[in-house]
Length: 112
Length: 112
DNA sequence: CTCACAAAGTTCTTATTTGGAACTTAAAAC
DNA sequence: GTTTTAAGTTCCAAATAAGAACTTTGTGAG
Picture: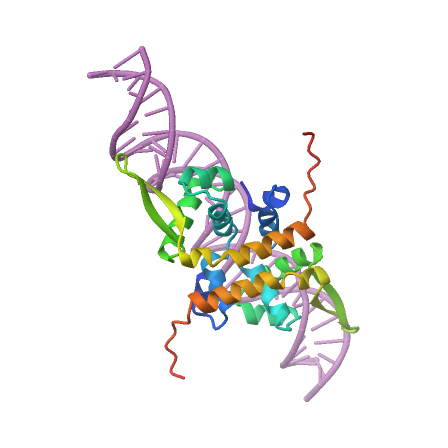
């Protein structure tokens, strides 16, 4: 079964996952909550390929979670901002953050 | 960049995603919270292939989110149950559930 | 004018992951 | 003995992702 087939699953968790349930999508949403909004920002912040970012942003816009807004006429440029529907996703990211902070301490021994 | 490289990212959300940030893993966790615990239950409940379930369960056990418990000697059989660490993941799933219920109504027009 | 630069994508090829079905193992039930 | 059950594994084809280069539309410098 393909995961997109989950979109009309009886379970709301499954339906949500069919939309945002992949690593890069959720990372893009995290970035949005951190205030990022532009294509290249998502690329460098997440480390995903431009191809993936392009695809995921398209999906998020289609789903009404993000909205494309013009931030520059000539050259025409758009940025991506959270809609109300997108904002309401924050509890999920907060839950991820809390769990990660508690259970997955950074193991890098940086020589700062 | 591969998503597993996120495991020592500065961001706790990213670290969490490197572990559980894929559709099937989160769906398996949902099943655990619903009380399922056996291999074939996960297979039929999620619709993922046996291969994937096998891989994801292995990962979840390694991460200390699930625990293998013997439920039958001869034939030796194991079931998978949430650890404390796993239980603490519930806020995230609840957030997904709430969001899905509100924003992704089932669109199937079932004939009862 | 021409060259370099920037942002936001798109395209291309190669590598990795996933899907689906069949096979294995160990014991129980018929 | 043959079938059934649970929990995996293995195999190959198909889909998806990685990484780098290229495109488009315009700006600013020399």
